[in-house]
Image 1 (cartoon, helix red, strand yellow):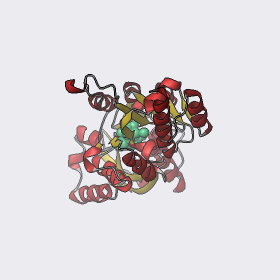
Image 2 (cartoon, rainbow, N blue to C red; image 1 turned 180 degrees about the vertical axis):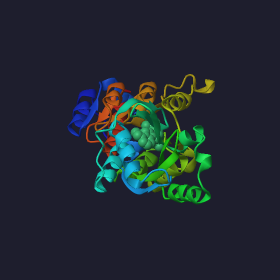
Image 3 (tube, rainbow, N blue to C red; image 1 turned 180 degrees about the horizontal axis):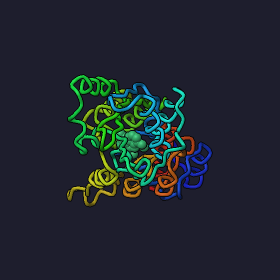
Image 4 (tube, rainbow, N blue to C red; image 1 turned 45 degrees about the vertical axis):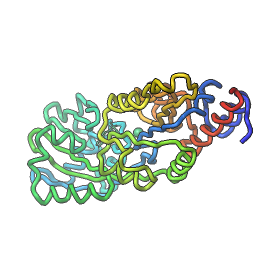
Length: 313
Ligand code: ADP
Ligand code: MG
């Protein structure tokens, strides 16, 4: 391909909705040889639908569980949350206004907690959370089987529970992979660029997505906290071996993500790329934004970076 100047490269990428903070960053994109993707909202649409939702405690009715669940999720920002509020609505259960919610907190990498009516401590989140609370092990063998079964379907498992009732209900939500994800990964491979996944989600879910889009099993890192994503990116930015000290060829790590939990990794990578639909914090911490969140625009911008690099050299 023919070389292009900074200005022409920036104009061309901007025209396609890729906003790059300056010519130096565009040029740097030409030296990327490893790309780390967040999963939820980045490789996937981040729009969940509920595939399973069941009460498992005899102390609560389905209606009561749905009320608690929508109360808890109404205030949560994770894309899982709105799918559950909607599922409750679809069964005719609206958020109960007579109940109060206080001390609503995000439990990083685990879910959320809050106090209902000033006294009942309720939790909603994943296996890691309910394992830590010591409630998961109390599930009946039949329900443990359900957990396995739902987990194998590639969905994300969740639970709702309280201090007094233990686990009240469980659910499974499913996201879908972005249509162009596979094509983008194929283009990266063709360009000799390695692709990785870093996610807060479970390993089963992450591996299912990886398989669907052609990322090898060993390039998947699951159940990560924001700090873990940051450490992973830092680890990839390994120093060049001594024998290459005179070699000027750069090998950059690019991180692509959409969430608040990706902000540290976006800042740490040599190139941070955010999705236009992503959290404001992610957009702020990135060097590049894909305005329409289409992943093939990322590979387009890398190719443009390679052309600019050729001009500069
Ligand atoms: P990610 O965006 O990669 O899923 P997060 O750190 O935001 O990472 O969340 C980690 C995990 O915590 C989620 O995959 C989910 O299992 C659980 N979680 C977070 N928020 C909620 C919520 N509101 N309801 C249920 N589970 C949640
Ligand atoms: Mg995400």
